[in-house]
Length: 472
Ligand code: SF4
Image (tube, rainbow, N blue to C red):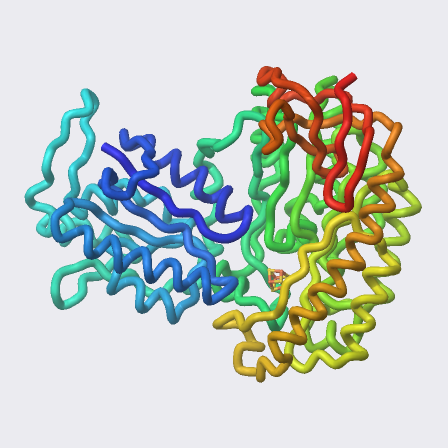
């Protein structure tokens, strides 16, 4: 018996998908990439852009069409706005939030689909509706619609009881790179973003569980581990007095890294500038295993715009963080996220973003041309910067990025870099990977046993987006 999963959106959704896989595998299902083979069809939705939600609708219409001659059950979870949730319950068999994932086996069994038995034969649950009704008191979020189909109540806080979810051991998609969710939800309410409405308020996971998961990964030989959270560095702030803060969490990971004697890199994403203390940067500078790469979203280089975005910091606050990184971590690479064409962005405000890019000399920038995110505060504001203007500003910032990343990458020529080998390069006979600073690199080799290992490479050439070298 097989399942098909469609994860959409960010790294958090991909990480959540690994726990969904565990639950389905625990029920005896195996994964397929062919929808028509699957008994369970699920989407891990993303509401950041309307495009993502449109994909969910087009997929469920297709699956419901398939259901005419195919016995299957459909579900949707992930980042879903309340308004979409109301519509999804009429289209999907099951709608649940990640904190309800432990209930998925019950929901599926009670729905009446083929359930794999131990010897992989199938049995048919013929009395599903009766048992569904009988089970209602045990499934707190399911009520019956008039037609007897299950209906999922509006969830007040999708972030509550996340411990039930985190305790599930993830079924990792890679055996050398992994994510560890350390926090869920967001309290920041940036005006362009819907995450606080889809994922709820910030909730931090127990530090001892995070460290235990990390140790297990390191023992298994994982080389790159990324701590995940919508506001990863506000870790612990929701549990002041009972939980450690983000800097202390990194310190404990760093101490373990030193004691283990193993080589691995720990990253985190995405931090909010407002919670980026000097202490966090100091701790990163003290421990070898804490990756010397910082992803620090700027979003805009203009104070008025930052205020309209409700980012709760100024450009000067941001500058202080960059200066501290450059002072304490001179070897660190810095990545950012930046939006062009947000509501009302003037030439002057955009120029301040360009100047910020010039000043901070990023190694990588994820530049977004603003599009309305349904459910966000700004979705009721005019999206008044013309598309052509957004595109023009996007290209100006891309040129700015390339200028600086090229200079940085050329500066690596002749130097050696530690490289995590991640796979085959598109160029035949080459392997690809990334440096500790997450600069993409390739080198000549056909030795596939190197994939998942950290090797030393001498850099021989560079472009703005990648470097090339020879293995030492
Ligand atoms: S900090 Fe802002 S952009 Fe990030 S998840 Fe929260 S609201 Fe969205």
